[in-house]
Amino acid sequence: MAQRTARLPAQGSDTRWSEQAKRLSIYLVLLAGAIIVFIPFAWTLSTALKAPDRLAEFPPRWIPDPVVWGNFPEAVTIKPFGRWFLNTLFVVGVATTGTIMSASLVAFSFARLRWPGRNLLFLVLLATMMLPDQVTLIPTFVLFRHLGWVNTYLPLVAPPFFARNAFFVFLLRQFFMTIPLDLDDAARMDGASYFQIYLRIMLPMSKPALAVAAIMFSQFKWKEFLAPLIYLNKQEMFTVSLGLRTFIGESWGTEWHLMMAANIIFMIPLILIFFFAQKYFIQGVVITGVKG
Amino acid sequence: MSLVSARSGTSRSLLRLSLSSRQSEALTGILMASPWILGFLIFIVGPMLVSLYLSFTRWDLFTEPRWIGLRNYEQLFLRDAKFLLSLKVTTIYAFVSVPLQVSLGLVLANLLNQKIRLLGFFRTVYYLPSVIGGIAVAVMFRWIFGTQFGLINGMLATLGIQGPSWLGDPDLVLVSFVLMSMWGAGASMLIYLGALQGIPTELYEAADVDGAGNLARFLRITVPMMTPVIFFNMIMGIITALQEFVLPFIMTRGGPANSSTFLVLYLYRNAFELFKMGYASAIAWIIFIYIMVLTIFIIRSSSMWVYYEGSLKGR
Image (cartoon, rainbow over all chains, first blue to last red; front, side):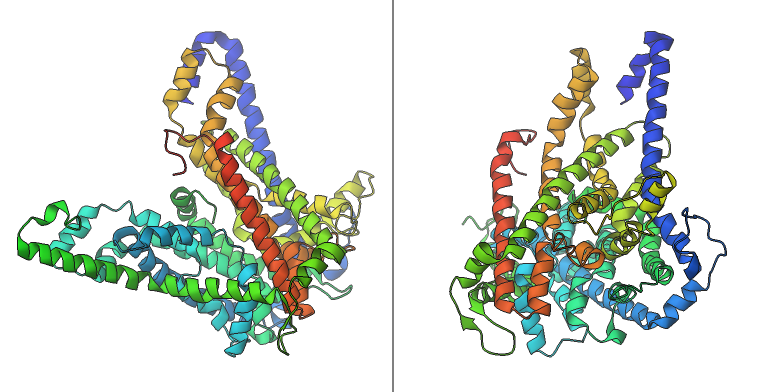
């Protein structure tokens, strides 16, 4: 872009003026886009603060009158929301630990160690990223049911310990490839084992990539819906994402103000983590070229 | 001995040492990869074979599976109108929403790829929808698309327009889903922005020397340089869209008149509401083959329109 702006001053004020107009229109388009993105959030918040009898107000009112903060405590007390929240934290915590442990170990092996069949298996691993989950869904369900794991968290937290999400192996492997081999060689000279190299060199040097993986996976897990839906059927065992559904009335009676309050509570951790860890999100995109 | 690497010298003891270290490296390598190898066998290979087998059976989960050959597939393709409809609506949704998302993402990325202020702000805002993704979006839009009290129709009504039944009209429900998916199009923008910034400026400088206009620069440099990224994200996007489940499940329950019963929702119904495990497995395999054929087709055809810098194709 630099060369374009550099050329301009020579061409007189006419071009400069049209350049200004162009910039302005770009800002306007971008701003309009930002507003469109914001509207659903704003409406969600507005609804969450409305009295039930004000939901159907016409014309739509953005600033509720009265502002009912009480919807939030009500939403979390008419359902076992606190329990759901803890359940989800537990599932996300354990599953993320499992993914990071297994994916980093496997990624180290693929990035650094030479063994027969490695390249072929890496292609297979990449191919599994394209595999639709449905094709394994039913037998996996049958297996877990057979093991008595229905209504436990094991179906949600055990597979991550086996690097079931190949994407994260791929992500970490790509990052490990960028760490200079000299470090490994030097450590080998000093008599370090491969496991020590992994533990003492690769992991500490890959903190940013591990953070990317942990954040991307935990966000994915927080939002996960189909697996909890299939495996958890006792309400007190629900995760928040599954619990949200219970606010939808079976026929006519959805209490939208409570539903939206619950939805906001569900979204807050996602948004907070995103804001505080933005650079990691961007890095994840940069490392892999995929939006997780 | 090709096994001896350059740096390990030639003496006999070193040779033996390096051989055994090669073996130990291989052993450690396999051992360290074993979580994934095991997981691959237990959670992917095994279940795939079982679901292939189940797709040739009738099974209600409680009695023994009964082998019925190709009858599930026959039923699905020849007699199950609901399935054919779901195949159709899922395909339309994926093939309309993803190219639109990609285009919008590209436009946004191009707009942001200038010296503009507030770049970080716009980037954050546009990425936000995909951060919350899935169920939260479905819940929000179910409310916004409401016929009577929804925000959109409320706004339309203030203009004196009677809004349609966004999610309740079989002809409109897919349009609503596509519109909603556009809301999340900003996520791919981030990828395209990165790719745009990776295009060497010399290319544009050379074009300037040749007197190329803006449009020519865009079509002859930007687009060709971006095709690998566009291509990859298009495939991944379509694969993801073909597996959409939460949106119809939460927003419409597949209705009205099954017009938003996407494939995975139909599979879920058969498996976990009707306990037709064999039938559902056949649907799973159809989804799998559909996605595989599509992927192979796109990869095969990519040489015709994807430009890779240098002569190396692929990576």
